[in-house]
Length: 314
Image (cartoon, rainbow, N blue to C red; front, side, top):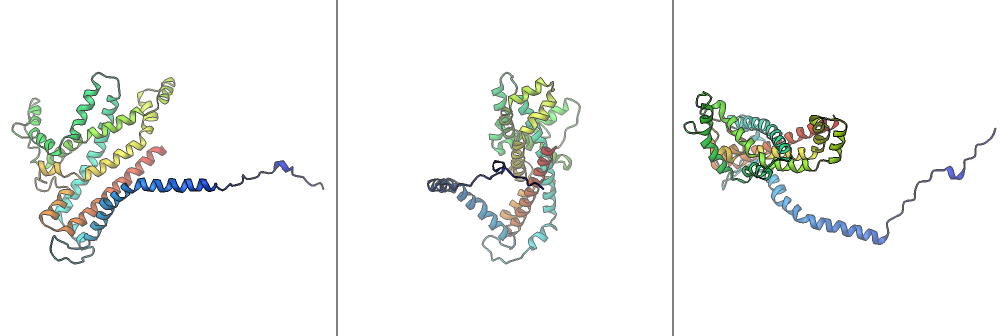
């Protein structure tokens, strides 16, 4: 029986781990300290204006605190009372409906316009500016303009539809059209920021990949689906997050145009929180509503994240 000899050079040896030099460790520690020093203003800002208020809201939501009055610990009493409150139920449903309609439509329309503005067309600067103006215009001014557009007597909406034989409509006074009318304004107002973000992302799509797709005979839809759309993934998620937060915080538009009416048809969460906190002075109750709104925002963001992962896996 012969023994098999292993050649010394055939052994696989792991590379020896070399500890960093003393000067190298000092450099790393110095870089870490510098990084934390540069981050400290942002961290301090987040602690003061985000972390502390969130903790305060969570604590106040478990009390019956009112401005200047005595208060007591009520535990989850505010939460149980909320779900028996018809105004809160209406505001919750209206806010979710508003978000479900406004977020996807505004993102889709913004992306379509951004794709158009990314082409070589005349007066491109004018169109980009025109679409962005509503974003930098005060919401009160926008609401005032749309109040005139929706005016049942002399408004532009009824005047335009009248050309086609449609009867005039009480846009903001009818239960069936009040919330959809606000959705139209919300979509229109939010286009500018999304268009700018999408336009910047589209200009960063690899030209080499697009040219390769052209050489392979891909049509416009195939290039968009297989090249452009995957490249927009991170931007899509950013736009989704900002859209969710902004949509759930809609207030001034509703306050100026309808005050939550007719009835509770356009009552939204932030308007309900405002009235409970600053009109009825029920700060603990309003804090409980705020906590529920934060949970809803987190749920919507979580669902959006799952949808993005599913799209990437496909």
